[in-house]
Image (cartoon, rainbow, N blue to C red):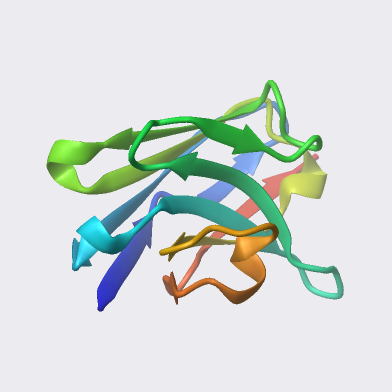
Amino acid sequence: QVQLVESGGGSVQAGGSLRLSCAASGHTSSLMCMGWFRQAPGKVREGVATIYTGVGSTYYADSVKGRFTISQDNAKNTVYLQINSLKPEDTAMYYCAADRFCDGSWYEDADYWGQGTQVTVSS
């Protein structure tokens, strides 16, 4: 089992920045990837960033490329999501997720996910 705990959400004005953190504990060696997805009321779940924990390679949704950066600190078993140039449309609950296989849209049915942290961007 793996436990994920997010932190770092909040309310900011458009153009601002936030850094989300996701601390993992438990059997983290089983994980192939970790990442973040978001979900706003009435909208579909969107996977925004993935990092493949073994090699460090990353993937971003087109909607966030150039603004979001995912990184990891293996010593702390923590994944970060740096969010810059925030837009009102980034408002959502952001969830950290992790998976053992990371196939396709893995976040749709991730093995593990956290409780979420709210990001609210005002114009």
